[in-house]
Image (tube, rainbow, N blue to C red):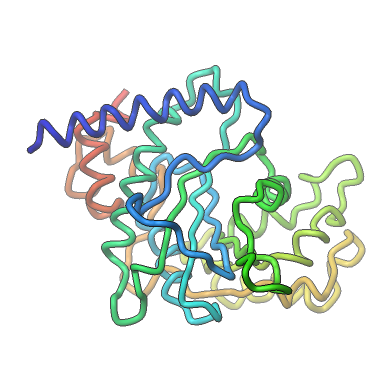
Amino acid sequence: MASRAKHAMSSLLTYFRDAVHAFTSSSASLQVLRTIPSSSTPPRAKTLYVLDSSFNPPTIAHLRLATSALSSTDSESSSKRLLLLLAIQNADKAPKPASFEHRLVMMTLFAEDLLRSLPTQNVNTGSIAVDIAITKHPYFIDKSKAITASGIYQPDPSKSGEAPIEQVHLIGFDTFIRLLNSKYYPPSHTLTPLQDMFEHNRLRVTYRGDDEWGDREEQDAYLKDLRDGKREHEGGKREWANSIEMVEGKKAGEKVVSSTKVRKAAQDGDADSLKELCTESVANYVLEEKLYVD
């Protein structure tokens, strides 16, 4: 059985390696490589949750973001779709410290662990699909446009007049800070390029629990500044705040989790810590493949 599972992982790794190379030379800007579960037709959903990360590797922090969204009741539809999105840049150069194909395998394992872990009393897991996708776009707003332009996520054609699928981007407060930093939007270096994104999409921002980002009150104040018009001189609109939801992140007593801590645990051969920081299948894969050791 172990031999069969290892062969399956090896085949999946090869598939993703070939897919990344083919995608790099194609004209496509976004491609879904795999859908979990793979045995069924993905459900149509009114909301697409987007978790965009380097997944180097996927962690319990990613699990918290996804579980919170998929367990929420803010979607009118019982069917939900989650997109795990990995940006491929300079794919001809070896990415560090884990290759894109290894990350895509871990994203697949993470998706399977996620669906198994969802609270059945709140979620009908049979109505959820998780897509594993790659994009060439490094910037947030371009990724959002690429998702729309891909044509993959469309409303039910049998229901005339149905609104376009809404993207809800799942991000931590640290990413939220970067998103609203005008230095990332040359040449004008204003927040004006975000207008289209906020007109059609929402943000679900998770509070950060570590001291670096301040307490909850300080993080709420950052959003309040936007709502009160204190970012208007940079092009930030008050109404954008209506498309941003702040949600609970790490609960009291839970460990602060980061990909850096996971890689350190792997380097130290600390299997116990690794299994606390990652989902079970991801932790086992990191150990078996000896990732992050060098």
